[in-house]
Length: 380
Image (cartoon, rainbow, N blue to C red; front, side):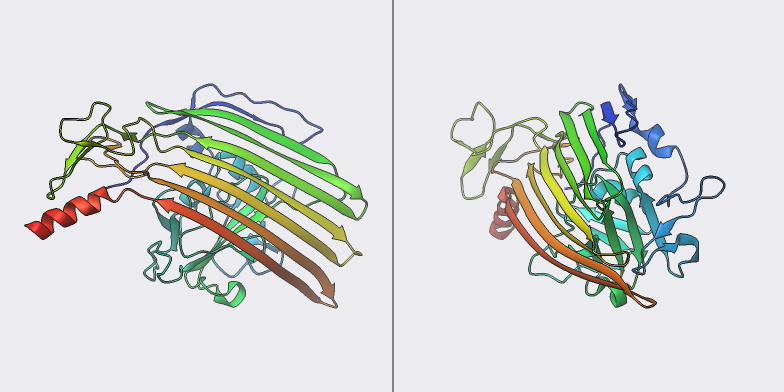
């Protein structure tokens, strides 16, 4: 089995309004994605603090705000504007634009990143070794043995890639490096709201959609709430085509609508574009400025992601086609609650961060291939 996603993704419509004071609408009809990905060369566009001339890129790779040009470690950054331009939605989108990272993926929620090819036997096995790359959501680790938490990327200030080792500041599972997803924080000084609506389709595949939005609500001059939500449907592009399998034990199984004589009908029938994905989630954060130097920010985030079918295909059957006879799906849900306290004592910047992450994953996979080849080789 090899994995591929060679179908051409076309964007039918995109409409974003990131600022309540400036409602500028953009509509794209059948625009190929490749020209947009090739346009522009500014990979590290994190924050623009100068009105003209060269941009000053601000990162927090060392737990404090610094100019990217002066940080004495290897850091790559994708800022909010760049993430929007590249239509970044999830893990497999943004890692393609971080040159020092490679990755393997068996579908949403089952992806493993590698910095500079460094690996420690990571294999997506819940009883296997810990990953060699740590992943952080703001100040909280979200690294899991199964694979990276597939956080939907929206209302994100920047994504930082820190080549390792990064164990000093980011602890275990950061021997090869660390990936940081830094969300936009509540801002008591301004009201902001925005949304995005998108329709898309995969050539010779299914159709998808995306709805997302955020609002920043000042409560007082020293407090604000930021609410973010999203709903996304990723189109399927792999076909489960009709097929028949005969085991050495004499059992015959078929997923075709017309079952051949002597064969049993499999629990799963043939279906086109059967590997679709539905993602729903929300994030809420409250910021309270206790004084000019101290602030407290509690936050909570939850996401549910249901993926159907397999994200691999069998070249012997056809291009992006395979035979599946039993249910194959994953249900991935997580909730994270966090508390961050920031302040200063003299010349020292202090940050306290505590978080609770609960992730539930249910996976069901078709093992008929394994059974067939095991029985065939064993009996021979």
